[in-house]
Length: 343
Image (cartoon, rainbow, N blue to C red; front, side):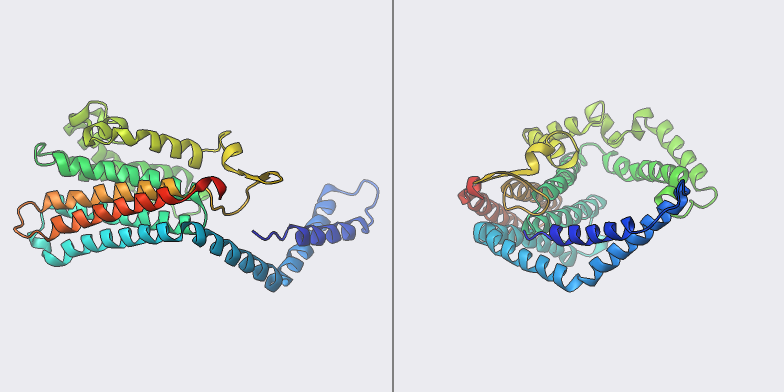
């Protein structure tokens, strides 16, 4: 994409000339030097803003050229991904409109909430992929992975384990306790208001009640699932959900797209005809995996709703789910048809 680095360098170089033309008395205080540096830096920042039309116009032109190249390569597949997401979203909306809240079970309500969260995540993945940011899309796929695992476990085991759903709901107290305890310690740095007086002590007391009711393990990340799986880890829940085969995708997304380890050396360089180029903006490489992961987890999150509606005499949910699976398969085929090696 178009770079404005040369103009930026020119502006900063002129500011440096201004700085060098300033005479400092021998042994001038450091504060005087810093104040002049700040003044010339302000000149550079204002000059850059004065070129806004040129800079932003160039960026928009580059973005347009990039988008056309991306659409030429990935357009049909990304369109199928969005069609799939919209179908899944309307599938969930259908549950909301076809059943009154009074007729929906607490489990169905929770699965609808998780499904809505999965739809948001999938939309984020689509937008990031459409913009040429596969690492960002893949980082969101981790969240969708966790949502999907949770939805499957609740859908498949809440009826057998009568306390499972309530434990999941109660675990919100643990999440609030962790969050507000941290905020109470660092609110000034984070830039938010200090928690109201008594909030932390009330949360401490409520968490203590839940630990006494369940176990010390209840305060872990997946403590609500400990009675089902033992330690209450995501890995155990993946096995319980029958999706442990996707753990490698989760691990790759963690190492490639989230953490700043040496994988950056691979992710942020692209091979060009004249050698490797450092990547500082969007790319049309590597968009297939996050799109495929999104479709599989969103389908899983949607399938849980059908299980919750088993008592229904209507075939509409089953037809809708099967249609979504076919769309997912079409998307998988479309992604496979793209030659990512020459992007």
